[in-house]
Image (cartoon, chains in turn orange, purple):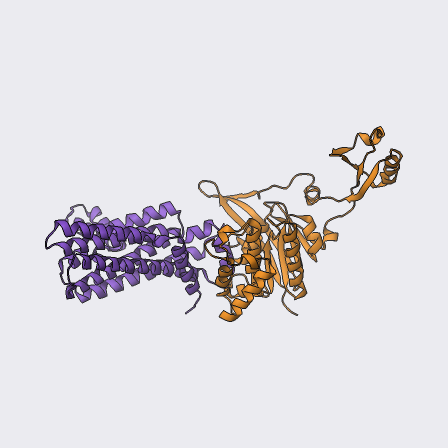
Length: 319
Length: 259
């Protein structure tokens, strides 16, 4: 049986804090997780949940206080393992005196590609992430979204087996987001494993085979998105245009939100048809009816017992 | 030997060139032109002495400023800007990154120093003095300056692995100045009557790199002989010291959490 793509056992990270650095703050608490080959795995959590800490531990940018992790059977301490992984840091920043082509060529020098292969692959990837036209522009002239695309290109430059993406949709416009989603799905199609962190529920729902939810440095649950997050409909949202001169019944009028010439109203699912009948009686023009799903924030609030998860992990020890 | 430091070194050199670090050559050229014109008008017979002294001192000073101020930022800048994150996710050891950064800056300094030496030669040519055999001493003095700069760069890199750029600058500059007065420190230790001061001075003398031995500017200006043994000794001394500092820097940096 082959090794899992990612195997994390009791990974813990404490940071010293305070002037004398004697107090410790736990950023990640005893994380145990396994990701199989070929999975798209979402790592969810609010800001400060420990997502970036986990990724940095796996990449070897920081060192664990306790616990171990293996990627495709190789310890995270083994630098040669890095030839099998790709990594996009959160809000990536690159050598701004280089062009995107030079940047990718530079990173390509640490791979097994020959000069000719490197040149061909760099050109192909720049095209793939939509930077072909800006390939010879210095990165200091790039927008945030363009840097994010360059970051994704460098992460998959050497065709790694496991790709770690820290908030890959951050800073991208809708077109860019769709392109990144396509790249992630392409990677899966080619048998690659993608481990990406996000705090945007819809990304995870759309892409992930499984997700893990992290809050306050602790793992809250792992499973398929539909299992892990109760996607029951909280309410139904009705968007409508009221007819001029017609007054809405008081039972609806109290709950209406006006946006320009349009109105929104959220009603419990059981009251949907009654509300629609009332609106019809007032000659209102119904524009849309859509379910109101719980947001990731709702989910977290529920998980932690209606207490908002701490944005920064808690202090755990005093030496 | 791993080839990973090579691309890092080339990239570091490219950064220096694109960030217009070599623009300092323009100031050096202006200085040499001005000095040559001035010396040509006011001094008779000591043109060589003045030009060589001024030129070599400027080469040393310009190089030192570059070695310290770029050296302390070699690692910290990459951490601060987080350019290091994507790089260290590639199959490259942290020590390879450090060696590459170090080699890149030393290459920059060598190119810079070479151009300044050409400028100095041009100034000597301008004042109308034919080149003589003893001018080779200028090259030896330049070589010593390069060794000195290589050592200062290693010091700056070492400190930047665990302290802020400002502290690293202070530490490097402090050690450099102490090292320049290494001879005086030893003499002070010998003459003092306090045993405690004697011990402190001796420890300081042996711990701090002896930069005094790298100064051959006066010898080159006056055409005095520089023994081959000093060239060999300085080369070995600088190589060992640099190697030790790079090993120490790697040990510190390899265990550092990159926040």
